[in-house]
Picture 1 (cartoon, rainbow, N blue to C red):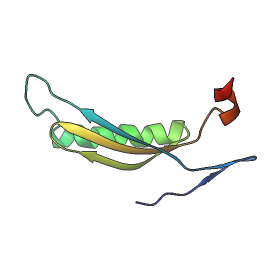
Picture 2 (picture 1 turned 45 degrees about the horizontal axis):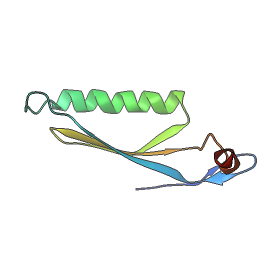
Picture 3 (picture 1 turned 90 degrees about the vertical axis):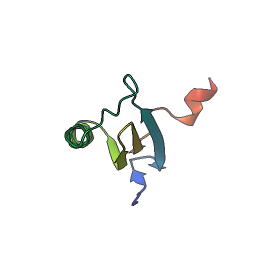
Length: 81
């Protein structure tokens, strides 16, 4: 896992999210090899369009794990108001 700080004009950040998505449809395992490949390609497309980076994408037959790095869009000060 390689993470790097994101440098902007006035800040430096290392903001990461872990997202786990369980997928169960009628107690069947629905994530096939083709679906996993398609999901990874969609994530690569999202990286190109938005300011996010998928550090890790892990998929099993019934759940998906994402480790996502992004830039904060709100300053700490705005949370205090």
